[in-house]
Length: 91
Image 1 (cartoon, rainbow, N blue to C red):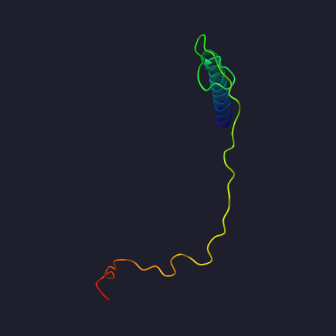
Image 2: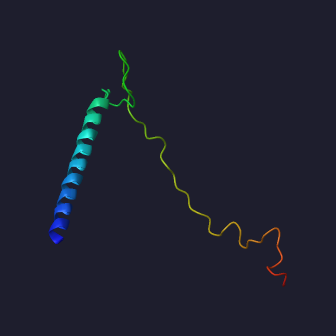
Image 3: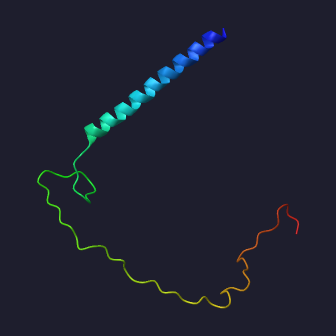
């Protein structure tokens, strides 16, 4: 009975290897079939006869400035505007 189980495990490994290999081949085929030619820097598919204009470059914007935080917090003690009675009615 053990020999029969080993044969089954061997066949299952071969079958799973064949399925995995065929999945890789299918993904490669779809990748080649669905590949669209794109111009460098283009974000979508290139239309026939499209003209691409390259910009001057990236700007980094303004430089950040830092300030010193205040010495004391704005609110020293926080108090709620409305106070609910304690749970259970005790108080």
